[in-house]
Length: 146
Image (cartoon, rainbow, N blue to C red; front, side, top):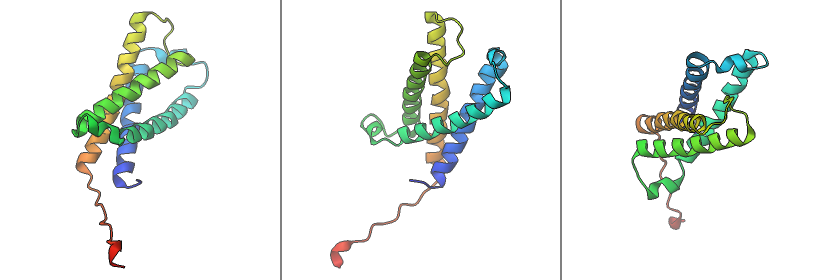
């Protein structure tokens, strides 16, 4: 459902994950130096990708499936983020679009943990949006009276 909670959670989640991505790959490591085309194009496209990832994470968070395991908002955020982080890691590894120059088991595990942590942070942001942004649910009218 498109409401204030969705838009605020979606956008803040995307910005937070993008900032974590930029801090890791752009500030703490030398990954951006390996980019073969203009950095500005890469950063704009990465921003679009993070909007899509945030949208998918929000939808995964809202799956009724998680209610079988927990009703805790933050645990649902962690589980959703960890799940999506692993899926994204698997896709980027199989397609070979990651920054890793070597594919040792140690580097792959480190990349996987980072990806899962990054998306888990996004899941926590979505949980905070669910906690702090109230969205009233309209009462359904009783159609039996007509």
